[in-house]
Length: 112
Length: 112
Image: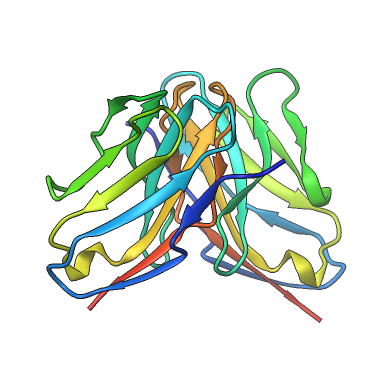
């Protein structure tokens, strides 16, 4: 069965520093991969998605992620974070179907 | 354009009370999903509609949970005889095809 692991429950980082949020998945078939951001008391906003093609995916707000099939990873990166990036980030996988499996989330805290 | 909307945003119910949560998907989106998000967790799949047909309800936790989408647009998630363990955020998402799901702001349900 497919699963998603976000090992870091919380990541503190200083403003303007780079950040990487880790996501690993398990699946025996081809997958679609997603990163969503959730601000307090709001729903999930799509940051970026990998469906096929280039393994480096660029999303909104300066975020990017790289699909690594051999390591079954889809880590999210941003070269310079802002205070406004403070939020919860969720990685999700689907086996090219409608059903998404989400990780437990990583809380990014950007410090001034 | 308008995104997914949900109402009410907050609901407090007494244990044993019935509740109904509404979702208005993005216009033209044929697929609609309901998720349950417990505190500190990622969303968990509840059910999936394609137009008015409920194609998957495998995630509904008990027969007290019921969802419908009678005209293929607005959907209602109903929970009968609410229990304290039903307290969570209920998220609705819609999609045009199989590529990405777009989420509403959620309904935060608190059962006392």
